Image (tube, rainbow over all chains, first blue to last red; front, side):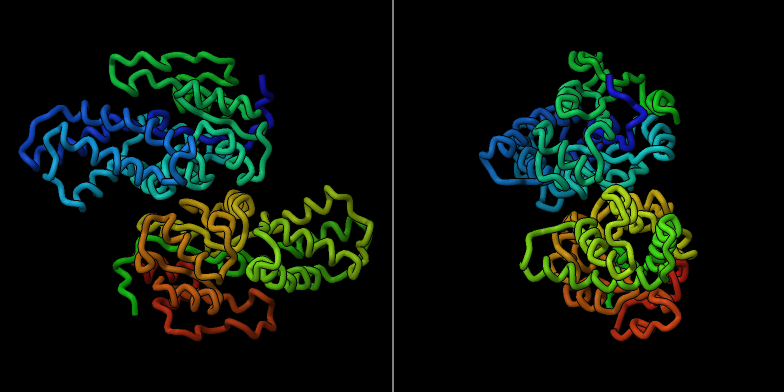
Length: 239
Length: 239
């Protein structure tokens, strides 16, 4: 196990770990469906949109396309989904842009802001998400998350779990890997960080994908801290 | 004049504008001089160090050397200054590193934190300094400056007043130039920002360089807002 007394910064996965993307996206999808007089399941829309998330980033990770920010990938995925939900040709470019910014307006889980507020007193706290800079910044302003700075994919020009993504975040902070804890609800993220020498903190989100979620229900690695939620993590980190 | 109702983010020069680099650097220089049994004027040391600031960045701006962060430039300048103050060979590498981080430990002017705390309620606030990421982040933690995110030279890989420095900061924020106000105690910084369409806010610091300062005592351009200090700027921006 890593020596947690060396930890100076906690960097966080965001979608799922800190905010509830599924309910938030579905809320904004439901609003536009209603405005257009359409009836479809907005949760199914949110799940379909999120299902294109990893494949869209993989085109960048693999070098198949040049660096592209998540807002642009999200928008392409959104446009490709419109026909199957009866929205083809029904949204203006401005309406598509606005719906795409649903990802900037996600709400935090109830424990996120209280836990991070406590941790901020002792540690540097920053999002290290695959979101782009403005997405993470606007989300923080909307949700009241008191980050010290914004890291994330656009700052490091790589998508997790590419190793350079974590190492560049550590370098920007002026720290060494053992001084930084990656916090996530996703075992894969922690596995990549741990392999590079970062500390790891697991915060489960068993309802991120709804009541029938089958993945990431429990830690599956030797993570340095396993906490119930962000308030429990704050307590376990001495704040 | 720009329409200030469009402003969504204020980005700040830091050295001089938000923090008192001269007293802060002199304080840390005085401590090491005392520890080494040397007597010299620590303010003269701080001024000599700062005098190498623009020339060191100019080697990067001109393309003479590749991208180099300010911590590295500061350290080179520091090492080159040691002989003239009787410190040649008297500091270990760790002591040099620690003294170099005096720039991470600068104190805010008395109006900085109260003013920025008010502005943060309505606007995105961020440092856009020539400091590197860790320098600006550590300074914020030390000084209690409640930035929403860290911009600055390392994030945009350019030193002000290169135009790309301002434009890349605006792009990262997901905004247009007219949505962003550059705030500085230095007319040159505002002139460069205004030429690119950013709004401008001047906050004078007539004692940045001590009691005999001759530069930047007053605004010398048609800046959108001229404020006495950061609290006055907060009031003038409706917060």
